[in-house]
Image (cartoon, rainbow, N blue to C red; front, side, top):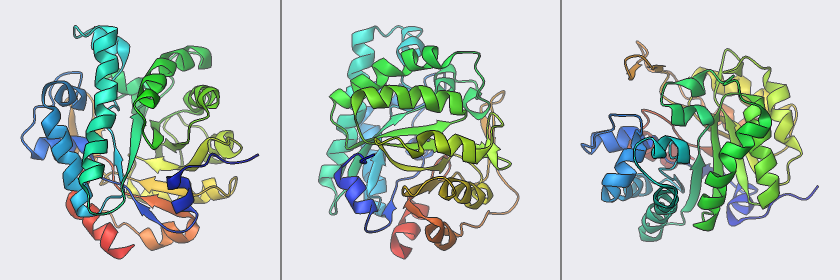
Length: 299
């Protein structure tokens, strides 16, 4: 089966590409208020200049892919905060245009990845770290379809199907992706060498191994110690480029809406990740421009 073609996919065939870091922590460092259920989506709606500034900070650090602020933007969630459908669509489009402006201003080639967060993200209760929402694959596909269509209409270089906790949701996303033919990467969030919903990783990665639209497979928003075994599991079922953008090892407490950091920094053996096949490497929550700059300098 032929693979999706895109400039980013072509780059991955030749070299390692550096992703950006956590958008929410950079926005917080810029003084933005991320309280409430909309999280970074609130800043997208109220302070788009700050979102663009965050993207520019990562581009200056050497990031070659900027992930949009659309992770938690969903029609149902935003309707609960007074946004009608047209307004939410406009925000999805805005998320792409802000990242694109930052990419155009960079002094090196930068691609835009439109973030498609999991269903659990719009619940704003930490459900993406559990999965098993009680929805069918068909219901999950119906949830994701309009978001993906709106993001693609804005013209990103690739879709980032990220922080997926469960193969059922991956199946739903892949169903919608096949309808569009758009290039995307698929990234699970994992713990204890399984998906967050407890499914075996080889089984989870195998779902996307034959998907022509998927240009890379891997993990994000997990402890760095989880990366290597996950990459090995992915490499056992696919020859697609792999990706890794973990957090700093902190654990999210949904009740207090806060992170609990590890007592000591967790090592990032990126050379080992690359030997296993990782070609997209960056950071997720609590990883800022300084870490991305070190990754870019050492790639």
